[in-house]
Structure formats: C-alpha cells, structure tokens
Image 1 (tube, rainbow, N blue to C red):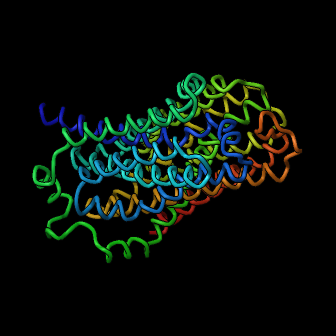
Image 2: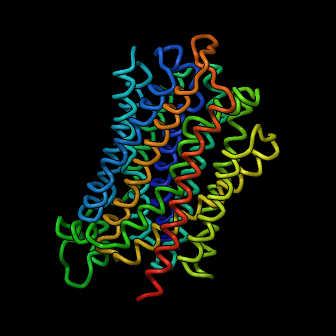
Length: 417
C-alpha cells in the first residue's frame, strides 16, 4: 500500500509539471491584445512568438526520450523546472519581441521534459496493463493546466497584467522543482525498475542505433502523423486563436471566451482516459479511427459554418476535445510496439511532431488572418472579421483529415500482417 501511494505521488508530481507546461503552452491566448499592444505585433508575428515555445519543445523530444530511457526522470525533471522558471521570468520582463521569443523558447524546451517524463514514471511505477489508463490521466492532468490558463489566468491578467502573471508562473515552477527534488527517487533507489525496463539482456535501454531503428520503421511515422494531426488543431485553437475569435466575432469578453475555451480543454481531458477505456474494449486502431472521424467532422463544421451560434460552438468544442483525446492511444500503441527498453524514445519521436505541427498551425493561421485583415484596429491590436477566421480555420480541418488517413492506413497495415 505504501509503495502504491508512492507511485501515485511521484507520477502526480511529474504530471503536475506537465500541467504547468500546458498552462504555459496556451497562456498567450489570454494575452493576445496585450502582447500586440506592448510588443507592437501583428497576427503573423504573434503566431511566431507563441510558436517559439512549440519549436523548442519539439526540438528536445527525441533527446529527452533517449535521456529518460538511459538516466531516468528525476534529474531531467529538476533541470526542466528550473529552466522553465528562468524562461517564464525572461518572457515576463522582456522589453521587446526578441527577448520575449527567447523566453518562450526556453520555457518550451524546459517543459519538453514533462509529458514523456510523466509517461516514463508511469511505465516504471505501474503495471504494463495500466499504461494506457495512466497515459490518459497524464493527458488529463495537462488539460487541467490548460484550463487554468483560460478563465482563471484571464482574471489574473485583468487584475495584475500579463507580466506579473508570468512572474507568478516562474515562482510556481520553482515550487515544483523543490517538490520533485524532495519526493522523486534517485537513480540508485530506482535501479530495480530501470533494470526491468532495460530488458533481460541488461544493456542500456536506449542508444543511437535504437533511435535509428525506430526512425526506419513504418508504424512510428503513421503514429506520429496521427498524433500530430489530432492534437495540433486543438493546440492552435486554445493555445492562441480561439479566445480572440470568440472575442472579435462573437463579442465575448476575455474571461467568458476563456471559459468557453476551457470547455474544449475539459472535453480533451475526459477524452484521454475515455480513449484508453474504449481502446481496451474495441482495439487501439479502431478507437483511433473513431476519434479521428469525430475530430475531422467537428473541425470541418467549425470552418464551414458561417457565423455559427455560441450553442453550436459549444457542441463543436466538446466533440473536438473528446475526439482529440484519442491521440493518446497513439502513445500507448508506440509503447507496446517498441517495448519498455525504447518506449520513451519512440514516444518522444511521436510527441515532437505534435508540437511542431501545433507551432506551424499557429503561425499559418496568423498569416492567413493577416492576409485577410481589413485594416481594423482597436487600442493597437488588429481586429479580424469572421470570414478571415473561417478561411484560416480550414487548415485545422485539413490536418484532422490527415489524422483520419493515418488511422485508416494503420488499420490496413495491421490487416495485411
């Protein structure tokens, strides 16, 4: 019982860092007008600023996977929380775009240790048959961090300003660093679990040859395409463009728009564990296909409907989030296909594409919005009309259709074997 409680504690701290990372990931959505005004940005530059987090996060995913397989999570999570605090403070104090971008990138690279680190903790401390559930719960934890970055952060920004809010974020990361340093077992204490993860031959669990073998295999690329195209549209929406869309097109205030965006994140949080439950009963590949179909239908409706009602947007937000939760099945499938010895490396490959495409979509939507900007401004921030958003959101529908294609190809490949 004591070991079980310790398992939940160490996983909970790693998952809390993932929640913090998701908080930072979507926080700019509550500061769009403030950042445009204070840093003199248009939509394209704002998209690039927000996307710098994603590019840095994606860049570290494969190295993080290899390092976690070799050294375990404690030291990497401690380093990540410290660097995240420094990056958040740099962003908060930045006088211009260059330092703000550097701060966002530092945060992104630092929290890149969080999600795969939490999955590594789950695979070491929980039975293999529970990995799908723990992966879903890890995703859910991240979503709760994202929810905190919507209406609650919006209220804090209104009260203290975006700079003080991000300084508070830096302090929170330092608190997490201390808790992880005190509570997570070190390398020696966790050696038995590491040996089991390494396999019966006792060799180091990950190496360059193992990474190349993973990259040469077909399943990892289809899993990567699936996970990226399922998650990236949601990241592009709740991470930056959904709140200004609700504000400028539907007249919602920042806090109200953040609350509606939280509905999508909440549905995504529920979708992760639900996807693990469904996958156990109907099979992973069928579950992935069903989730992709729901996601594609919902995002296509969002960009096709002219001036949809708030009730329609609410329903679509729920279905997009629930369908998006099925992306977690790709991680569980990668964990089984590539085994415990190289599981974190394989999951790092998959996760890198999720953030790369999320960054690309944020920037692309900003470019498409600027292309249809009519010159309207308010307090130094650009105002985009509903047709501009509808055109830009077509990119989200296209991405979701690629996710559905990847799921179908994985099923066809499985049937041929």
